[in-house]
Figure 1: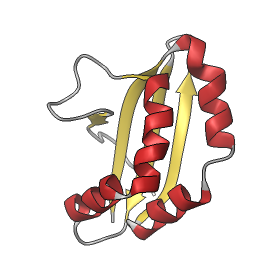
Figure 2: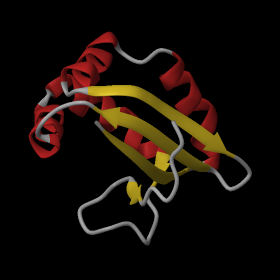
Figure 3: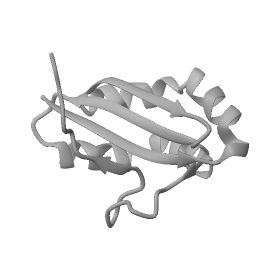
Length: 109
């Protein structure tokens, strides 16, 4: 199992919309998240900085293949097309990233 933390900005005028979207995530999107071996997925909001922090555990064998599977899914693509206008990627994110990945520096189980 691997843990991932990521961060992205959220446009202040889109915070309410983003919250509403995530209060009722589409069932097909939730099913794809599970099918791609992601568990314990959370997104947190930090205001007034307007940052979203996501955390999830990956329980599969091939993270890149599972992420490619998710990215190829038409319903997930549609979901992203609704959510992405709410988000504001960090300028310091890595090449090819939308959400900036973060280094885990501490864990206690």
